[in-house]
Picture 1 (cartoon, each protein chain N blue to C red):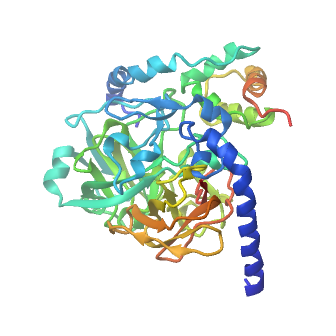
Picture 2: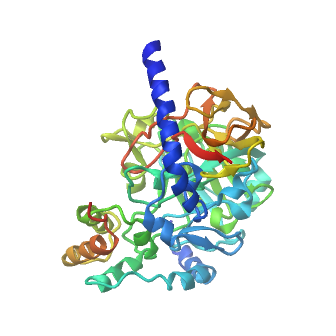
Picture 3: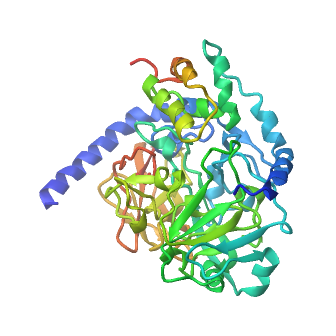
Length: 415
Length: 98
């Protein structure tokens, strides 16, 4: 992009921002109180039917979460739980595809490892995993592929998530590669497929099975976790054990995992071949090479993103008071290089980054904006990863509503 | 996982999910022609999926959703009922006329 072009573009953005600020304030103030409203957080608004229907609801063992659907249970974490870098177990979002979710006990659970590209089939109990393998721990963000789907313009069908279909936890378990090594991985191995204990209410519905490239399955960061933030996994988050695939979107983090199959053929069930797919070439995320048998491709790693958690759209700031901008940033595993804050869309200023919990974790950021003259202003945050990927100004539309990482725009009023 | 051992476990779950089930039964969809046929959706999911996905799909959008439920997820919905269900959804939960 030429310098003159980018300069005029910047001016245009500034002007657009200022104009919208005046128009948006009234509407923002009226809606700020609505539960889970995305406009209140500086984004396009959720569908009106979603806003009207969603409510706080307490699942057993959870704090009240934003109910998207009762059955299968889909519940979103409210914004206030994102003011710490690690998300509480009892506030962690809940997402299931199939309504048949067994309540498992640690004693009855077991994991079968096999497949046509495994040397042998083995079965492990939870006690076996804890006894026979070196434990491993990692702090990693689990984010639903469709987090922020409800913010898409135009809206697309699906679970209409706001910003809270994500969480960050310290996961402890065993390395998948250690488990696979015991079963023996043949040279013919192409993918590793995972099945959970959940099942469809109707037998003919495709069971939820996900696969990973063998290299990702063999990555030392990929775990079979039995602990989350120092405690057993909550039932709703996959007790007794789930897959942890740091950097990859939540769809691969199979809950209640009971079967691991090393295979020489791509897994082609509905959940791999049709769901969780993106138009090819629209994103720069890694390609899942053994799954390129149709015009689209599977979603893989998360895109870089951030969320301001300290301000709401339309908020009034008393004149003379500084504005505290705080929030979280994350990406698909490069780690966060910087978060910049802007109050005009033209100048971007580096925020202070919080403690580094590793490249797969939420990273806190903060900045204090000195008190401003009375009137409207916009506050934006833009995260950039260590691989140079940055958040987008315009939505990269895709039909299933994945990878929303549009820069947040909060309009404030100094009064 | 479709293993026989899991069937008993699913029954156990229904007790734990009872709270949500009770809440689910309070969902009231709008009255209108075709409303009764929409109960077929309950075989697999709660009806709040409909409210959540409103109001932005037009008739062809809702028809595509119902067809997906039948063709992909094998919903027990008679093909003859697709028109009535899609009409009900478009009428009551569809994109408002421009």
